[in-house]
Length: 182
Image 1 (cartoon, one colour):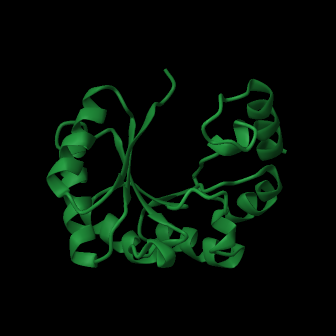
Image 2 (tube, rainbow, N blue to C red; image 1 turned 135 degrees about the vertical axis):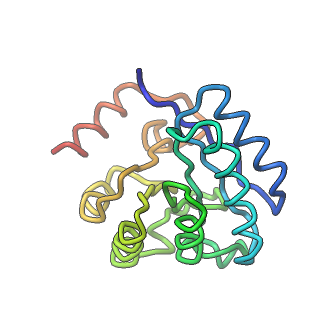
């Protein structure tokens, strides 16, 4: 059995809607349920993280909740991933993710350098959380990702030939795996 991940979307401040979507994804079989926080405010973030975590973990404690913030949070006007991490730990979720919110081809590395992402990953581990990194990553980023050492990397665009909406290509998946494992 291979784990299944479901992204329920980049949510505005709607704790009830987010909880329902997360519960639905968990009921449908997702092992990892990911939500992006597309709004600002620590109290509001805590509300959504708590609602999503409760919706998944009360019935499915073995499943994983992934809370995503954005490397480009400043231009989005949303909450920083560094502010999300302690809220995620306090609410009992499992992973904090950094992605890009505005999908214009700019990479997470355009907004956060390697040292910042290492600090983020190490901070998450100190909180008992895993780290997921995504956001227009390319093959040239793999060496930096190996040094950063997150538990999960998101490679959709990379394995779709640079077009995140294209079909996943088996040859590119094999290339990514070979580079990651080398």
